[in-house]
Image 1 (cartoon, rainbow, N blue to C red):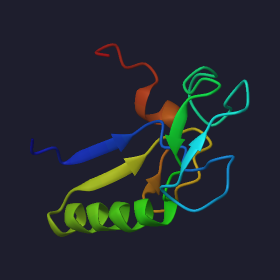
Image 2: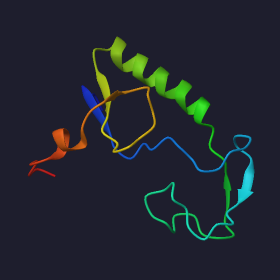
Image 3: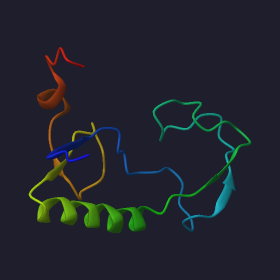
Image 4: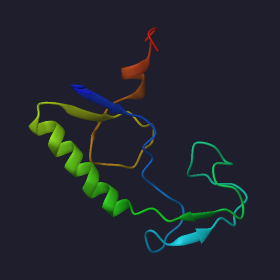
Length: 100
């Protein structure tokens, strides 16, 4: 698509459960505080545990590819835990933007 700058929002990069990545587990809690909505994963639903280390490797590769091409990826996630991308304030990017 040729974007010179990409701004990420919503990359929390943390998870309340520990375990072996990609292991299928059943949601037993009634609410999930790690997603944008408490009912994102309902009680009794099956899901795979995330592989945050693998994600970091992939994020680093994406950042490297962008930088080698003279482009950048910024992270405007509020309270996000990812340290791969340059952090920017959400408000500094989106405040007073009437085109959105």
